[in-house]
Length: 559
Image 1 (cartoon, rainbow, N blue to C red):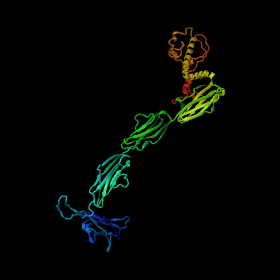
Image 2 (spheres, one colour):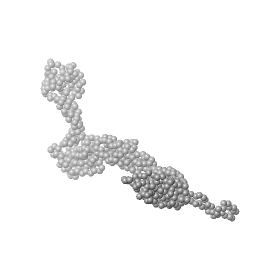
Image 3 (cartoon, helix red, strand yellow):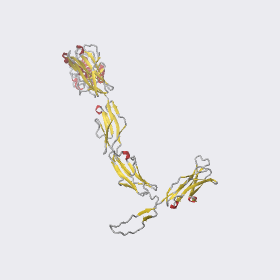
Image 4 (tube, rainbow, N blue to C red):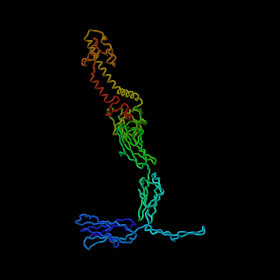
């Protein structure tokens, strides 16, 4: 048998049409539903609904009926219920509920009922006069009032506040007033009071007034919260960049922040381009662009600056000219102190080694490692050798090498007695000067070889001809093709310049039937090879004991 379920309201406003629903649980066959108010059958006012098959009903159905009824004050206290019948003479009723009729005043009563009073000023009185009305429960809110009536507030985060804003309504019985909005303080009722406002409290707020008769919502209060940057965001999020070669780039790196109103975002750092805003691009990075880069965001409420990107520049060691360092040639005397010092700048920190070859040591490249003192501060490494009591065996050649993952630096120091210093300096300077002009010499040798070959041809022709002056008209204007040679025979006419080299040279020659000594002619191929070797190694560099030295000893970063 189906059992009806009554889910109807208890309190009903008089004169208002109310809808009731009666629904059975699943049963077979379908149920017939009847409606009653106390003992009066009012099923004729109801509308049967289509049966609904329950889940996996197996023939069982749910029956329902809808009653539309307008209650009167006379229905106060009556019982309303429904019944369901699906087997003859077996019906089931719903739970009985007492109807409570709500109504407003039909009449306002004055007591006493006297409507006119005549009294003398100052000495007589009127009253008390009682006013009453029969109401149940009277009325709900017709309007919800906000005081003050401002509907939009703009405040700053943390320092701003909104309120108190009072919400009220005319109700009988009294309405319950509640506020709704984002992140309301606990215990908020009819008065909205927001202090030390946070950005998550921005949004729309409303007040609701309600009693048992009805409810009503106030106008919307909009709170706008201005706030400064609380966090900076970097994209990509890489905090450290390591650059190992000049002219590499870092970026674009974008800095952003959540602000209201929008923030002005800027980057700052070593040698940063003017006008860099939220997007940073570092191009042609060198040592002067290594360091910390900061992003700053600012608006009318506040600002925030954080170190967000670190650029590390790795470079090979070089001599720091801003710090004291020893000269290449050092004079020393026996039994005194020898101090050789140098400051190396490098990143990463280099491994520093000192080697020594005694002046008396005749074995080439016989360098041995010696003790030294090195201290590092940042990218600068101070290294020195200190010999308190110089002996003859301490004179010689000292070499410092500084090596890191990027490159290597060498510097040589010649330590000798005072008497020998000037002579050694001259010899060493001459050696370096020779290296410097090696390329030029190679070029001159090549030109001389060509000129010598031409002279050999001329001499051979002189040998085969009758005696004649070597200064014939045939050899005029000879300096046109070889201005580096100044002999009177150094320029030939164009037909002579095209002769093969093998016809131009001989081991012995006669000059105008004379017999000067033998002259060896150099081939152009040999001179080209020598010139190429000098070009490959560099005119200002030389190799010694497996080390390539620069004429300036790699004294700066650019080399």
